[in-house]
Amino acid sequence: MEQDLNRIIPSNNIPPDIDGVFNKVKMFSQLMTMYNCAIREVQTKFEVLNDDLSVRNRRNPIEMIKTRIKSPQSIAEKLQRRGLDVTYDSIVNNLNDVAGVRIICAFVDDIYAVAEMFLRQDDITLVEIKDYIKNPKPNGYRSYHMIIDVPVFFADRKQMMRVEVQFRTIAMDFWASLEHQIKYKKSIESPDKIFAELKECADTIAETDLKMMSIREKIIFTES
Image (tube, rainbow, N blue to C red):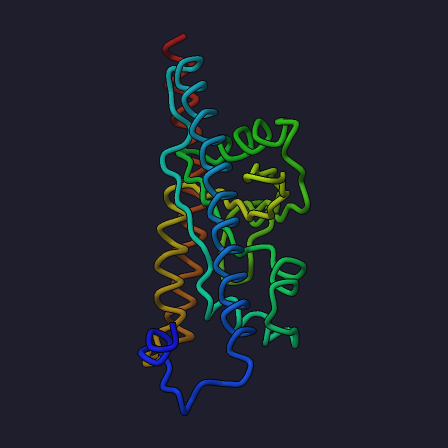
């Protein structure tokens, strides 16, 4: 065991609290596993809902489901920005977006319909809603955010886990992805001009989403 440890950490650099360090690493790894399990629970719920709606309505309102877990670096940086300790309890008690699920819908009204159906499930607890579709951010960002608690059944207990669920149309998701890439570029010429153009694109996308929804309604009316 000592030889294995020395391969990882030279003996002259081993901190005196090495057992505590390994214990914290183990706890963090277990916590990330729990968040991953919560993501799978939420993803499965949306997949079942989408399958059911495809049979009932002959249409899948959900185009795509994306998932992600915040990286350790992102978690630590967010806690530090808030002046909080980087600990197991601090992560659980102060961060709502460690586990994330993104639901990409075809139309804006699908977002609200699917979100409402999801919240009707009796094991889902709603914590918070932020509607950036009806109330876009100043930069043009549009999305529908929910913070929810979902039960996850582990070997010896049931644990309520927190997950952030974001709903977007395909166009909203494309815009947000582009904005995110540009936002973290350090060498942008005329950044104010670029972000003004992005805001114009966001407004155009919003108008297009509404027009597409109107066209769909006309097609449905014609078919009926």
